[in-house]
Image (cartoon, rainbow over all chains, first blue to last red; front, top):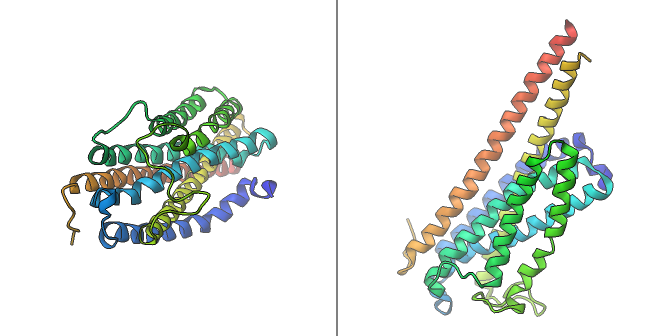
Length: 243
Length: 54
């Protein structure tokens, strides 16, 4: 199956209709999530009143930040084992977008923290620090690739960093259970099922699916750009050598 | 019409504004990059075709 998707030409054909479909679905779902989160759901006084509405952007960003890092690590692993070019292109495309959603998670978390906990940031909070570390892993991945003089070296160095850094993802997930944290315990993804009321849970899940579809569409667009850039470079090289 | 929030309205709007800026910025940069890459590929392929024709 990997080999079927590893063909750049096949990927371009597939993504030419899949990406616009994802953009359209994402626009609808995010708009519905915003409408629900800002206008429709009642404020929760137990969670500090209206400030809990930040959840509908902070939590999808947090989930997507972790999922995108895992996606980058899996694509890196596929490239590392099978040397599929499209997997490397995918990992490279995920990095800047993963960094963007991680930055969104950190920024909205700080804004939510101030009125809720009385502080923008807590340096000894394991959840905050492990997400900040993931943000630096994304930036480090981008910088490391850019520092290499060949595409092969960039792919290898990036893949190793992405795979090693993936150890941080379970640490983020379980940090609230293992260490002292200002964050509450998990309330959606738990072994007993979601503890959150359905009126909040559904808009949260729909928003998260919308963010995920937008993210996937943007990754596909960046991958298409990278494939076109590589093709242009090959054509330019042929032009130079007169082939 | 904007919803009427309690005393934390500024924090809520700040969160969604950051989201708009970051996600909007990411979308704009991705689309511009893709357009530039496609334009460059079309330009190079045209040069290759011209080169083959002599």
